[in-house]
Image (tube, rainbow, N blue to C red; front, side):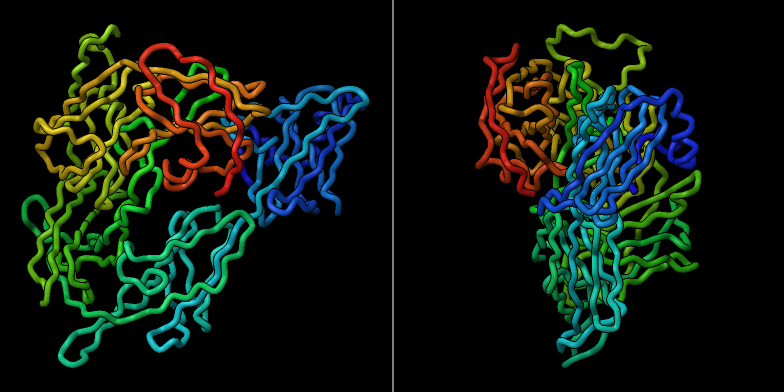
Length: 555
């Protein structure tokens, strides 16, 4: 069952009968009724659990009948909201909108003889089934299979080589089969079993994505293993003094495809959520290339040495880390260029976390710059998203003008619109050595920096109405975005009204959906270009109000 905020967890830990008894004085004829249906088929959902909570966190239970209907009677006059769940479905609270979760809304008032109404639709999870076969087409048992975009992303093939992933959200998934490493010789050439992407690719860039939608069961997927020319890659992990490091985790990193995108977080940022002073919360995020996948991992021996027995020719990255769960973590990276022979003698030197200083050029701003001694977090304006699987450390709130907790390696430089919106300022450029590296990849090591931020404050805004759009979800996406896309999203208010503030001037796509999934559409902005309205945002006040019609959510 889906869990919500702390008050709900506390109340849910008590027996339903006790909760009903505590809330029973005085009882009236107030009641709540409703119907739960499948969002894909429209069919009623029987046996769904209904939990209705009042403002004192007392919980009342019911279960839907064969028609998907439920009724709760004998309630006190007051406000209530519900949680609805069933195995095989994505549970929801109240109407299931993002506004309910983020704004604490979704309350219905029950009083008198007329029942309050709470109808909801539950979204059925998707699933994906297939099998792994060897080079001769025979079932390959005991092979690990990984699926992208899913926290529970590991399955193991059975004796028939079959695997299943269930409870999948809509999305474009990539499958990776990891056979046990083995090598053999054929005609004087060493061949090895390597990780294979669906359908039979050794590089993720050549993988075929699999689309899953709500309630769909994608079956018949077959991953065919194969052996390819490989070589041995070996080296040693060293500490700062050049001494061998035992039991370090060493990883072989692949190359992420440019077409694969994910929600980017990073060290130094305030996260993807953007608070707004308007009635409904504005959220946003940054979507960009996925991190580089881990193709294989080993542990260094007592003398610090490590070895990957089967590595394809190519230009690879290696990362190593030790003591990540201790007080003194250390990490490092190295490159491995594999050609037509084995590669030996690679040294991965570990270092302790370091920091990079951050300075800001406020330009011709009318805003008050932070005075000396003010705890103004300039470091919040920029985020660094690791590419080399460096350990993730918690952001240090004491780092006012620096980003701490970094390890050697490559990072993508991102701005942090969360704080920029609040302070009336945004990052137009991030200079490193005089070069603008915003949205670019940089290599960082101890002694790197400082970052110089060029800040501007010429925000614009948008306002308008969505027809019959009370509770509709808006997306505002830059039209000419590069591979890094920063979007904003908003829940419409009463009458379908909406307003976006603190928008960087430029051309945008604006689109509304009456019902959406939990995540933005894939491949923004291309995926919404054909259904969105193009708007131009200029510095200053909002232009004439815009009127939109909601589009159908397709993902």
